[in-house]
Amino acid sequence: MKIKNYSKVLSALAISSLLLAACSDDTSTKEKKGKAVEQVDASKFPAVTSNKGKPIEGGHLTYGLVSDTPFEGILNKVFYQGDPDNQVITFFDEDLLDTDEDWVFTNEGAATYEISEDNKTVSLTIKDNVNWHDGKPVTGADLEYAYLVMGSKEYKGVRYDEQMALIEGMEEYHEGKADSISGIKVDGKKISFTFKKANPSVKTGLWTYPLHKEYLKDVAIGDLESSDKIRKNPIGFGPFKVKKIVQGEAVEFEANKDYYRGAPKLDSITLKVINPSVVVKSLENGDVDVAEVSADYYDQADKLENIEILGKVDLAYTYIGFNLGHYDKKKGENVMDNPKFQDKRLRQAMAYSINNEQVGEKMYKGLRFPANSVITPTFKYNNKDIKPYEYDPEKAKKLLDEAGYKDTNDDGLREDPDGKEFKINFASMSGGDIAEPLTKYYIQQWQEVGLDVQMLDGRLHEFNSFYDLLKKDSDKVDIFQAAWGVASDPDPSGIWSRQAQFNYTRWVNDKNDELLAKGISEEAFDDQYRVDVYNEWQQLIHDEVPLIPTLFRYTMTGVNERVTGYDYTAGRQYQWFDVGVTEESAKK
Image: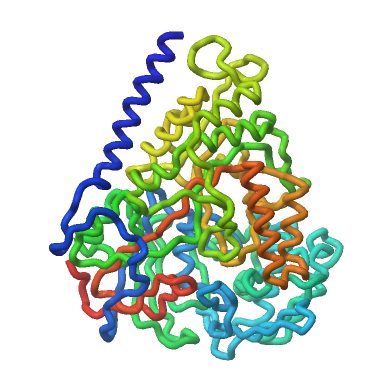
């Protein structure tokens, strides 16, 4: 008994040292270009490169995909699941509709759209000069094909959702009762979608990413995701063409001179995976022109003279999720059948036990801040009346006592309500210097209220293997630390619905079903109604705690000073056709 207590004290000392080490830059003054800076004023990050020079002809740019693991190589938006693959896709393919700074569709992209007076039909017209990289025109049939793939029972991806099911005839097609989707009509470059009821998310969340039907039609739907046409030889209609792929490591792109917006300002781009630990050195040496800079390396990057750092509040949040059940593939829905965390008082206690304000200020230098919700503050729908769970270990202990989790053998750790040992396996991802200290810090805070939390397998897990554990509902995982980059559509059903495969906590709740349905109902065209619905929904999440939102964050990118036209604002981050370089070699 005493040995267990002793090791717990040693753990506290070690983790306190790690936290202090991570915090040391907060109280010290550093010098940059002769100006003293005590802390990061994230509100002053520029969003657009200051270089306004004319791009040179024949320019080449190197993009650093920051990851401690290879990208998976599922290079199509219908099938990919991880952000590294998405970053690759943005260079050579895109959606048909652009969005504005509020993520509402515009008519500036590859297609224009209009909505009928009854708000039930959305019609798209693809512009005449929009062609696939093989020269074939992008047609309405290509967008229809994407829906036929995602609605098929053979589809192995995760993007068939409640909104798609609202299209007339989609459910019948999905169930195998029809060979086509009656609510989708195609006429050459035109396509229309008629919904069973009006849905306000058609202005922000309609799927407008086509699939090249002629190129892919010979591959069975169930085999598309693993096919060479998706993984090795993908075709898009974006500003660059895929020239060569070194699987998981690098991609060579060449300009699509026939791009519908005009030839790109760069002749070629190299994308290569770089480890987070060498990002700053790579930027300093000019090995990459553009690369994301995480908060743990911000201080180092900020000292470089050859780059500028662009930043914004990200469409993302980190969270700690609970393993509440499993995904039933036959039923196509989540089942909440894991008894370990069914008592929400336990989940609430774990939320009150961790000090995210200190984590954001100390470990992340103020570049992350406590999350009050699972709707990011970039949306007007974020319920600002909800406050983040505050650090209150005494309240956590009281909740645990009430729920029956008590230390019955005086070893400093609580047993479950039946008096049995209660151990919690915590899965967390590798990546960056902060990942392990942060994981250990959370573990220590839970141990301080008497919970025996251990790092799963005694180590961090790399990105792909981590999410493989979640997708397979591994019973080794009790809780996990992850993050969501959320879509531009405020409807959260894709992550939170009873049917969503991305609902990794496997939480199901009747009130959740009701509110999600209201959020995409005809009544939700009244914006105040929709705000009220999502305010109520966020309060439900806060009270039930299927997961603990931990931090919102600023996302930052280091950009070499020779780069011009790079825009980090919403809706423009991946518009690579505008980006150029004003010198042949990167500045060092």
